[in-house]
Length: 74
Image (cartoon, rainbow, N blue to C red; front, top):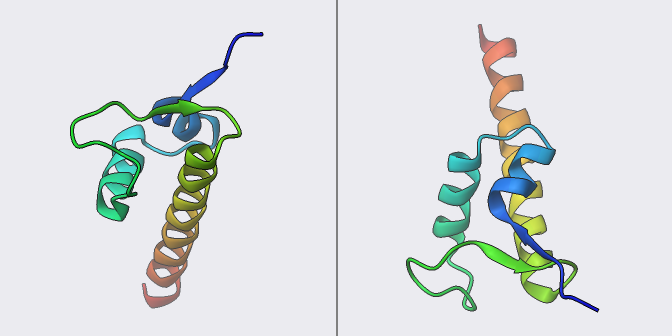
């Protein structure tokens, strides 16, 4: 059985997030397993994918909070 890979772009697009924003969040999080300048493609459901899902979830949460604060403050 082939190993199924998933990219950061695929993950971001699946939830309506700009892929560049997600890769920026990934770079900022700097997971220990990622090599600098390497692509953000990992084995689906592997530990690296779980890390990426956590970072994406945090990014979504931050985006919601930012949107909420703009609407409440404006």
